[in-house]
Length: 243
Ligand SMILES: C[S@@+](CC[C@H](N)C(=O)[O-])C[C@H]1O[C@@H](n2cnc3c(N)ncnc32)[C@H](O)[C@@H]1O
Image (cartoon, rainbow, N blue to C red; front, side, top):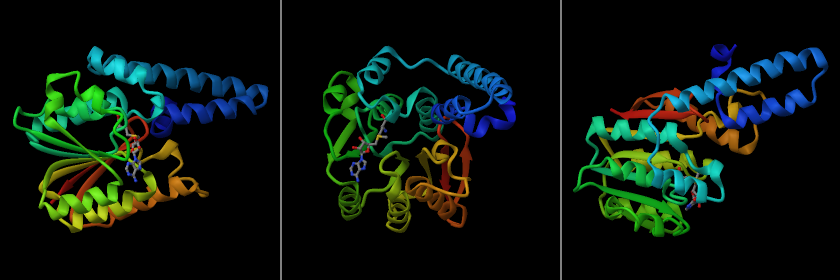
């Protein structure tokens, strides 16, 4: 059951939906659903246990972040770190900083002369960047992401890896700017978080956010300039390779 349902059920959000379903179900259905819920929780715990533990500084950032469900977490950052290590990425762009959890994870494994630019409308991450030596590899651009992207285009930036983790309704716009304005180099990697959006993207009726993510997924699927895979990791993570 876990295996066939793993796409949506191994995400915190979908477990939340399952909880609602259980509460509104009749006794017979409820006991089956409770079993599914237990199995999914065990599956999720197993994934976390078998994935490298985040260091204590990152655990602390996660605990101190008010909107904890917005932090992309251990599984996604571990994969980002592996991608950075094997690709040797020296220039990384992140859209959506929050308190700096993912930015610091990426910067930690970048080479000493690496540079990570992260963008957010708030500067809440600055104090966390100051706490570790590799925080100096990070430049925070405060402002609207659309404006920052134009600034980066003007300054002729090109990135080895880009991580999209900001407002879902602009994913398509961000992708178009990134690809059309050459913000990602040929051979570069684009990662986008939340691309299953709580398992809503394949439903017949979509919320505006799920619709925006679905359109982003379609945009990539139809674009011959990238090859991509959508992984059922946590809330869905897309990894695209710029040809
Ligand atoms: C999901 S959080 C990022 C989490 C972070 N990547 C992590 O895993 O630690 C999204 C962030 O994007 C920022 N954001 C959303 N839309 C934005 C916009 N249009 N311009 C600037 N920042 C934006 C929010 O302020 C928020 O901090």
